[in-house]
Picture 1: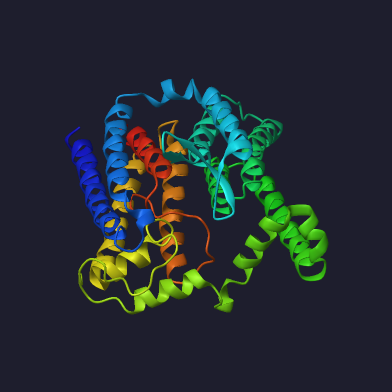
Picture 2: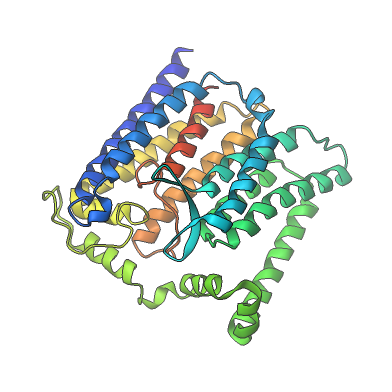
Length: 359
C-alpha cells in the first residue's frame, strides 16, 4: 500500500510540473495573438477540474464504470453525429461543439468510450474456439469502425489513428490465434497497395472516394518531407533559434499557427529554452516508466487491457507530437498530453489516469 501511494504521488508530482510549464506558456501566448488572451485562465480551469476528476475516479471501481460503457459509447456516437450537423468549423475541420463559450471535441470522449467498450466486450466474450475469437474480433472492429467513419467525415486523422491504436493494442495483448495476425498483415499490405495505386495513378477516383478535404490532408501527410509546410518551417526556426534558457515573455522568433496546441513543443522551446525543453522530454520519460510500472502490476488483473491501451495511446501522442514539431513526422492534429491547450483532451487524459491510479 505504501509503494502504491508513493508511486501515485510521484506520478501526480510529475503531472503538476508539466501543468505548470503548460500554464507558463499559456500566459506567454497572450503576447503573440489576442486569440490566446484567455487561454491561461481556461487551461487553469481545465487543470483544476481534471484533478477533481482524478480524485473522483480513483474511488470508482472499473467494473462499475464498465457497466455504463455501452451508454457512454452511444452518447459519444450521438455527439459525433451532432458535431457533423452543428459543429464549429476550425481550420477546415468540423470537430468541435460550443458549450457556454467552451469548445468540446467529441472524438476525445470517444477515445475513452471506445477503450471502455472494447474492454467490456472482451471481458464478456468467450474465447474457447477460433470461431469465438473471430466473432470477438468482428465485434471490436465494428465498434471501432463506426466512430472512425464519423470522424473521417469531420475530418480528424489524428483521432482515427488513436482509435486504431486502442484496437490494435487490445488485439495484440489478447494473444489470439496466429492466423488472425497473419490475415491482418495481409489485409494491411493489400490496403497499402490499393491506396498507393489510386494515389499515384488514379487520383481523380481516389478524390471521389474519400473527398477533396481528406485527400488534400493525406496528400500533405504523404508529401511532408518536401519542406513546403508553413507551420513546420516556423516550428524549426523557433526551435533552431531558441536560447539555452528562458529569454523572457513576448520574445518568440516567429509566430506558429496553433502555437499553444499542436505546436506547443516548438513554442515552449523558443520561450523556455533548449535545456528546459530537454527537461520536458526527461519528465515524460520518467512519467512513462512510472505508469508502465503501475500498469505492469495489473497483468494478472482482468482489466489490464484498458490500462495498456491508454498507456500506448499516451506514448504515441508524446512521440508523434514532439516528432511532428521536429519535422520527423507529418503534421496532424495530435496534441502533447498534459501540456497542449485543450479542455477535451485534458479532461479525458485525467479520467484515464484517475481510473488507473485507483488500482
